[in-house]
Amino acid sequence: MINFTVGPVQASETVCAIGAEQVPYFRTPEFSAMMKENEELMLEFTHAPSGSRTVFLTGSGTAGMEAVVMNMFTRQDKVLVVNGGSFGQRFADMLELHEVPHTEIRMEYGKALAAEHLSQYEGKGYTAFLVNVHETSTGVHYDMRLIADFCKRNNLFLAVDAISSFLADSFDMGTWGVDVMITGSQKALACPPGISVIVMSPAALERVNASSVKSMYLDLKSALKNGERGQTPFTPAVGILRQIHCRLREIKNQGGVKVETARIAAIAEDFRRKIQGLPFEVCSESMSNAVTPLHPTTASAYDIFTILKDEYGIWVCPNGGELSSKVFRVGHIGALTTQDNTTLVNAFKDLQKRGII
Ligand SMILES: *Cc1c(COP(=O)(O)O)cnc(C)c1O
Image (cartoon, rainbow, N blue to C red):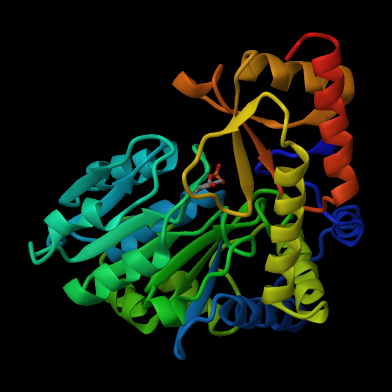
């Protein structure tokens, strides 16, 4: 199988080898030291401002999203949330569920965020901005500089779901004034699903410390307190945290986050070049390096996904809901090579020869 989905993605052999080992007991100085290093590497790779902290929460990315909404927002807030697909919708649903006052900036599928979408909200008393920097469902990557400038001008607390973008696109908490960022283990970190990572600036920590969140498992205060000694309040996904450690160190040893982002960008660029001439339209105005969303002009997107899976052993990523027959996505994150791209493009060419596309 070659996996071009957007997560879980292909892991390196070293990460897979850790998955085959026994899972060790974790209330030990060794595990604590490893967790401290995980925290430090995440702070370095996100360019977090000094005094920031990282929490590794056991749960998929959505657990991190909900923990941020529950621990950092209150009924006193007035939140602007970008909703351009299923992940933006998820944030809007969470704000609704947790009774946080909010306004949705609704985006048409595939459209980039522009200044005109924000201008009507200038100086209107908003307190926070919530966005999925890469709306993975449609493959649109929002302009962080535009968002950062808007938030600075309006003094907004800025919370960013960078779950599928971290490592794939450059991300700089310090420069952009991002107060909290969320990522997950199964996207460009290329580990199994099960860990959500939350990096918090001092302003985010202040919000967490002032909050009286009604949840035991998602209480970030207790995660932060335990994290001071490299521990977690409850049994975490120990094996995945060990795989994340291996992966973060691998990235560090190969030159750091810039080198990893450039590697993923090169894979994406290679793929986008190789599909020229095929009956596909790229259906995003502004792409992340993580994913290419494609609209096949001559066949159903879902049929292409199924045939590639069943007859070629290649997994691309189908879309859900109303886009399922119109769009499929090709991921560029995980342990993929340009040779893998060629294999996929050759399969597309074979589908063409067979009259399927
Ligand atoms: C993958 C993803 C998530 C998290 O989804 P889970 O299934 O809970 O891991 C959240 N936001 C975005 C933008 C994602 O790509």
